[in-house]
Length: 130
Length: 124
Image (tube, rainbow over all chains, first blue to last red; front, side, top):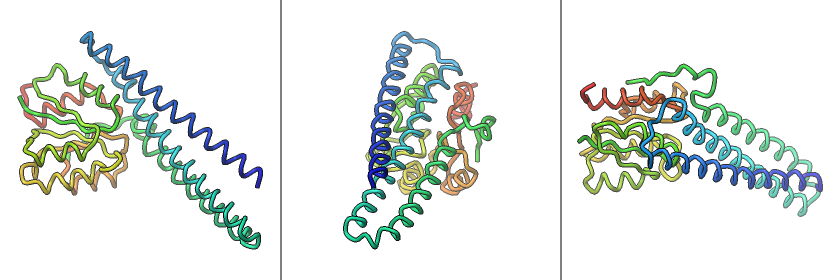
């Protein structure tokens, strides 16, 4: 249980750090884009890509934070069950493991989905008209 | 000038589209929330082109598109999805909802300009 608590606390800490990273990276690029707009600087492909990477970074970190939040809630539920009845613990442990596996799979899927053209399999995507 | 609206919950994404389109002969309005753009459309705003993100809190791009098609004035307004998502099934879903096209981020500035020029039939 102590180990589970430590892992949970570590995950929540990672979530807090990631939240700060999202805000700082957004603030940083907004300052840069405000400077460019103020000075009417032309945006080329490299700069446009750099600005959009921030969006990808935010989506990736946000998805990871959602996964951490789900894991945190699942761990809390397990701890409650464990406190109430130790006999339930074995069953709850199985359920917790299944839930964590599912959360991890969803997070991995989002990592792939939110990478855009940064993902090698979509690097050559062209604008598609229907 | 034709009115183009951009909807994206990422302010940096909006900044990049704003800078890319600054030299184009279009009027640009930007929104970080699709429901706010929708309210303005219902209030009488008539965009000539809408470029929207897919994954947004409160109202996502598909929900916005469905609601947009229920408004008589925007039933056929050209709409492009600009997103990190590239799955074929999502593109199909968008196509079924009357989407005009799909752009995967990060976009190439020149290609985005060409897409806007093409949809609005602006002089090249």
